[in-house]
Length: 193
Image (cartoon, rainbow, N blue to C red; front, side, top):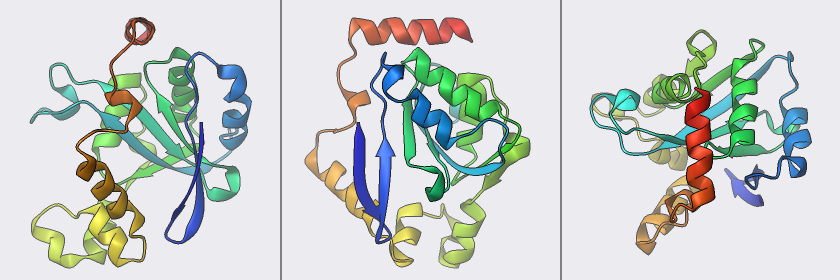
C-alpha cells in the first residue's frame, strides 16, 4: 500500500508492503537504501506493551520497523515483522555499516537489537535531547514529540493521534485479529533469531 499525506506542509509518501509479495516492493526498497551507500535514516518501531524492563519485558514483541530515508531517496517504509521478507529487508538495512540512524527515543535501537539481533548503538543519534532544547519546559518530564512538532509547524502528528484515539477503534492493521498465516510468519521469524 502507498499512502500520500502531508507533514509540516510538505508531501510525504509512506509504503507499507503487502506480506508475502516481495516482488511488488523489494526492488523499490533496495533502491531507497542502496547497500554500502552512507545515509542518515529515520527509525521508529511499534511494539506490544512494555513494562519497566522495556524491550526485555516478558512477552514483548516488536511489530513494525519504520525506516525513513532522506526524501530525495524515496518514501518512508513501514515493515511488518510478521512477514519474513520484510524482516530480512529491515535487517539488511540496519546491518549495513554505511547507514546511520536517528529516532526520538533509545527504545528504537534497543528494539532492533532484541527483535532482529542488529546492534546500531554506534551508528545512532537520539533526537530526544533536541526536543528538550526546543521545548525546555519539558526538561522535568518527557519531551512530547507531538507537542514539539505542533509548536514547530507540524500539527499533523497531534491531529492524527487525536483522530485515532477519538475513534475508540484502532485503524492499525496490526491491531486486527491475527490470521493463521500471520502466526506462522511470526513463528518462523522467531525461529530465525
